[in-house]
Image 1: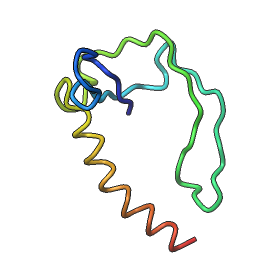
Image 2 (image 1 turned 180 degrees about the horizontal axis):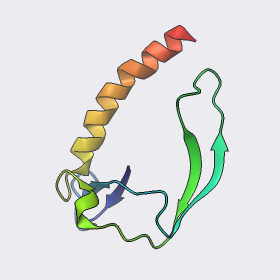
Image 3 (image 1 turned 30 degrees about the vertical axis):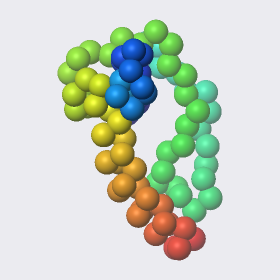
Length: 88
């Protein structure tokens, strides 16, 4: 999942859209995978996207409402990350 500014005439929260980007698409390349201490199930990767065309069906939610998707995910992750920290 990635977030992009799709309307730069407004502030970034109002002009952000969320997309699913497939790693096998031309223009997507992995620079480096990182191993995280105690988090083997979490993938942390440095990647590069260059001239990727995302089809409309890969948009998550509605255009320019990606900030809502981001905040919804963040609310869920905060609890999980706190639990992981406690477990480690």
